[in-house]
Length: 195
Image (cartoon, rainbow, N blue to C red; front, side):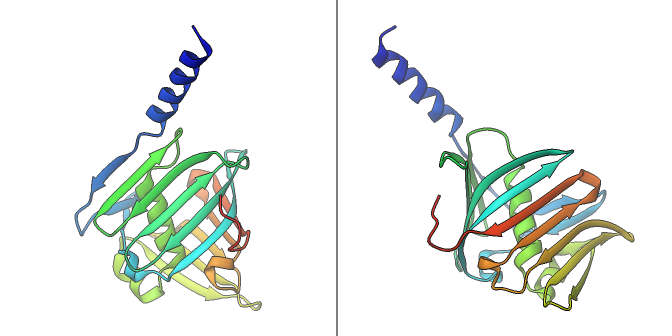
């Protein structure tokens, strides 16, 4: 096989891997969280406008993965792009309140769950309360101004979130899902970093 043919095969394989999907969701689409808890995905207009990059460290069952996450939210769309530390695209997720689109160069958490996590981190408390079913939200502030959110299902902690005292685009964020043995740390890189 010639070098040109090899390159064509590799490019074709990469395009197949990056093939995305689009899903139209109903206005009442809910994502499972815990055993029976659910969260209705919020439209972008219910979240703060953001354009920022974070170094994301995921630890699940003791295995660590790092990537750069670029989050852009305006009143029309939520867009989350993940890239490797070498700049290769890992995934793209966008949600306009009706259609969830995703592209992936491998396996990653279902895109609806990523959007739900963003809702849980970013939405104002009163907006988020209306989106939760069979879940309760407790929000506190630490002495250093850190926002702490705990999501419970029937008294059991499902998710713990800590957000540093900064605009969320520049905030350090920690998210723990004890039942999933999953911990996520997001540290800001600054607005000038574009993966």
